[in-house]
Image 1 (tube, one colour):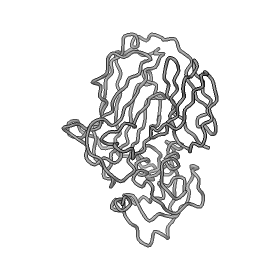
Image 2: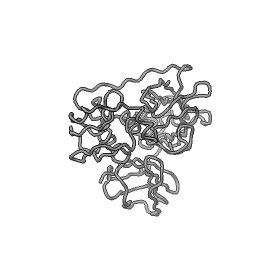
Image 3: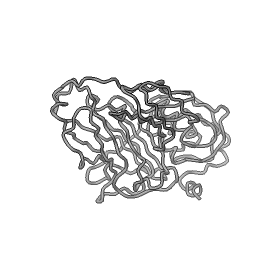
Image 4: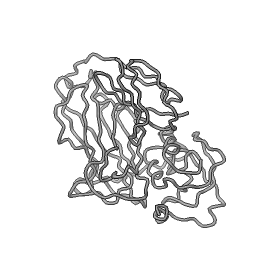
Length: 360
């Protein structure tokens, strides 16, 4: 039944589809010449569809010829482009991973993505709720913010996928430790039928993408995710009383790939006098994980013995746990598919989170 619904979303091609090859650049799903967070959205639209395998099942950054599938996205983009690894099925672990590996890569002529400017008070907003934030915040603290989509007065209609960017001051926030939690059961995610990615595009920008996988839109408003921002411990150049977290470059689609305009937002966060004065906090040995991407093992180093290390997949499911009680150790998680994971490391004093790529 799900596939019958999906057929209404796409164009069924005529007999001529058998005659023309499709040139696939693994990761550039929408074929606009650049790999970015927008490319995850069509993977959700075509999730679990089957088609012809490529002659070579590979994800190298190179033009790869493929037999076309009998379905296209709007804009006449063939579904074969969403089968990034060429194995004949569109899924998360093997088709979203090339987006991460080749993020930012370009080929040919780049057609920049267009992000309509939303209007405050008119379009549904995407914003951080600061109502529970205790200000000012100090160096080394975790700023936990609910990420909201839509309001009671301006709800969202027919959400299937959304991509956006979060901008922060790299002198204030460590984006490597920022975590966006999509695991809660919310109006947009009552059933866990979604995939998502959070990519560190630069020291000041996170590119986020979230899309459902079941061909069912959701309408509503309220909590969408939760974000943890960590104020850096060693604030040495900051000379201002506050900082801004900005959300922009938003693209929201329904299950037919129709777009709805969403308004972005700025959140001002007051910093404590100690942070704003430029006071240097003695730096502690950071938590590190290497190699990254990893193949068959992770080497974890922490400033003190690690009580627990937990790996979560991108859907927020716990996939592996150990209790090493050592500060430096090797970890060999078994039978994990290639993909993006989050490693949460608990010591007696702190909890550190790191993004880890596994590529065998």
